[in-house]
Image 1 (cartoon, one colour):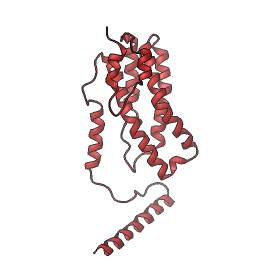
Image 2: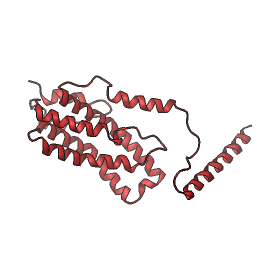
Image 3: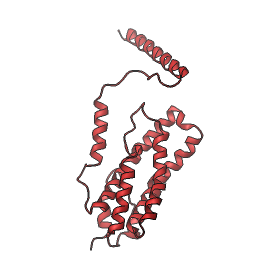
Image 4: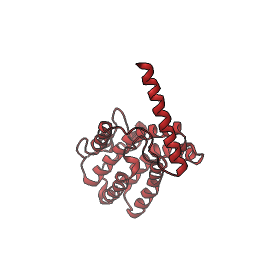
Length: 212
């Protein structure tokens, strides 16, 4: 008999752990048998998770921070709808809600309040948001691997999910860096961006002159 602990220990890496010792003590001795309903439920939540902006790299200077926040928040509604459609998917229900409540909910609760107060419009807070999101994403990738294992009956090949994310990061780091702030938005915002770019150019010229 394969137990939950035998299956789920693989999702406790050095840098990220989906399941706590307390969770494994409670459910670890149970027999691992997700069943057909669990496989289909996992397949649907995998699709929801893998296609969301929250699981993709958020490049610095690109994107709106509220988008991945909203994307993660909607996962709870998706999980509830899937759970309602697949009665008897107890493995899926227990695992999915543990991951969502233990890892995703603290993130959405923290940043939902801050977003309502306008914090995601401030540069310092957006940097903190991106940092928190980067810490959460490895857990989301592990969760997606678990959903695929429940769907297919076997774990995905090493790096088949996380490797894609790493490759996107590496490609971004190797790409040429565009200088300055892109003048987009309203006419006032474009004028502000152009003024900031001009001021930075002058500052760089002054520093270059001093270094010579």
